[in-house]
Image 1 (cartoon, chains in turn purple, yellow):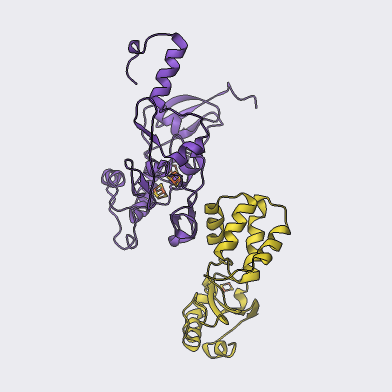
Image 2 (image 1 turned 90 degrees about the horizontal axis):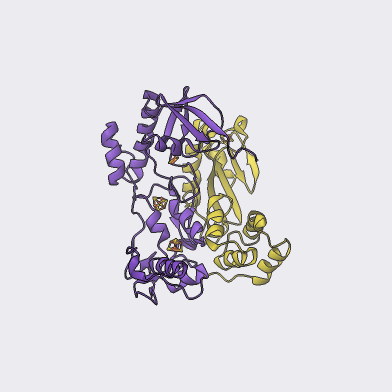
Length: 247
Length: 149
Ligand code: SF4
Ligand code: SF4
Ligand code: FES
Ligand code: FES
């Protein structure tokens, strides 16, 4: 793997880019200040490429930009060509069929002049099956929920369609959900039909997580992130706390 | 709640190394042994293979050959693939449902017989096709289908 310093060049919407070899098309477009709508993509989670909202055209082909690694020079991409827009409108219609009231989707639909197809919204529950919740849970260190079933039946669920037994109540899934489909409350903590305690930070007293969640993290004598940063800076520089801006 | 023969689950688990890649074959064996995947068995699989219960459940729910409720001792599957559909699978379904007093996907109350649909059995030349415990019966009419029961 000696590609680390290799650069790839090409154009997006006619604008030249130079990107590290293997960078995604989506990130590179963002770097140029271009906006490509995304839904299943989350910058902090492994990509999955399942929603197809981020389709972009290159020489008559459609590519999911969030999953497309730039590897060869001279490629030209179009984020708003007629083909790309048509594909995006099509995908949007399908997504709206799942989440007809989602503000983000409705905004995009307005821009593209797309309406939800009333014949499709039957059984819409606000979940677009993007799996961000499942990936967030796994990234957080559990795998308490999964996409279960096939086709239209597929949905996010805990084992046996019950409150997930391995859930620690961290709410990472709900925060990662783009449509707000997972009902939860931060404080007091309640999610997937269960209530959880919240452990206060021993230094500032603000809630820092559920006991189960802290155990999962495996940190001894945890303090909240803000206090940890403050303690760390103090220990590094030996300066009084007041000389640091509040976190 | 069904009573599960734990020693049978144990033997199935013991027959393979406790590694996640054996999840599917183990689920298939449990399905074959119990004609469904009992809850206790799924939890035992999760524990033994150290695979999260959510993943076990998701895999178990993905394959049509696996089920959470007991399947019939005898299984009638009606092909609903394109070729069979065009050649009258719909009429077969109707006739079998009426004859058995079951809807597609159901199992008779005594657990003797299950009725299911499947997508293309790869025997399109024989369409419409019904299998009885895996044996293929082709070129069926609604009348001939009733004789299979
Ligand atoms: S709240 Fe439960 S299901 Fe959601 S991410 Fe945390 S552990 Fe997973
Ligand atoms: S619950 Fe939210 S994050 Fe999970 S699949 Fe549905 S829309 Fe995506
Ligand atoms: S954002 Fe790229 S496929 Fe979903
Ligand atoms: S469609 Fe029935 S066997 Fe192919």
